[in-house]
Length: 298
Image (tube, rainbow, N blue to C red; front, top):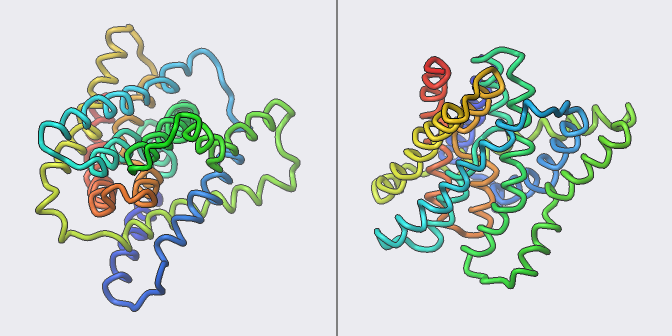
């Protein structure tokens, strides 16, 4: 319950302050910079060395690929059919192809499925969603922003993306036995800033005035993210004859709201910022109802 309260409070504070105070110029981009370049890498460096990985966790590690893979196929097709801009398509791929599996997903999975589901949920987040963000997400942002970079340039952007660097650093640290005791609390405190600041930034940029013109795009994006994607994950588990807490945690992670960090990445690359912020904000609100319903069904 505390996690839900934090989500609502930080998002609400951003919305309230944007409408009642004269905020410093460039506040939201500055917060976004901290989230992408400091808080998220710190979270990765803190969590990855502590993971216990075994074969039973393959499903939650791979199931997020259903979400991003489907988004890569679905939204370009819808974009061509309805005449959406490249920015709009890129924003929908990023926000609705990547789930909020870290600070929202981990808290909700533990609350709804119990503490035993937290390990598989973390695998889905770090080895599934986060790897997709660091590779596919960065590539989508580069391609759809209009830069049309050479493949070698995309590879360079991925390799220079601080969370991606942090991921491989964390795996190296894990192989070496983990961080010295002095480092762990520092990384944890830096990583803990991600949730409140990211949600506050989304709240600052939340604009319901854009809702009318984006209603169809929102329906398509959130319909995929909150309904069709977890349904496909469930069907995949049934076809493979898989069940258990790891499978349930993986499916529930596919049902999470759109990823806030992916929304920030879309805004940073000017991929339809109003739509990106709307999808993230409304997706969070709807998922507070839809995710518990999925957990009840599972």
